[in-house]
Image (cartoon, rainbow, N blue to C red; front, side, top):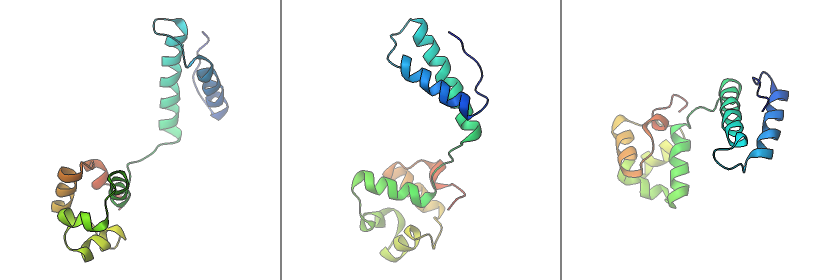
Length: 119
């Protein structure tokens, strides 16, 4: 096992290549240990250079709608009348704290996504 820090995208590609080779390693083997270390190194590098922030509130709502096969009309119970739902989904209106709580409690959308500043 020759583990080294990932300092650039070339190192990242090499780490992914090695990870592909040992990905099916069984527990309690040197390859499994190497796989865990590589996974951690890759995650740290990607979080530093390619961070992914939380979804915007509208993206989070639309994602949940798609997951559960919901229509804008189904959101009226959490947001209010159809006009208000439309304004929210089109980004013309921000969510109120009550809407955020209702969407979290009713549709289990994470608060982190509903409170995201990228609204």
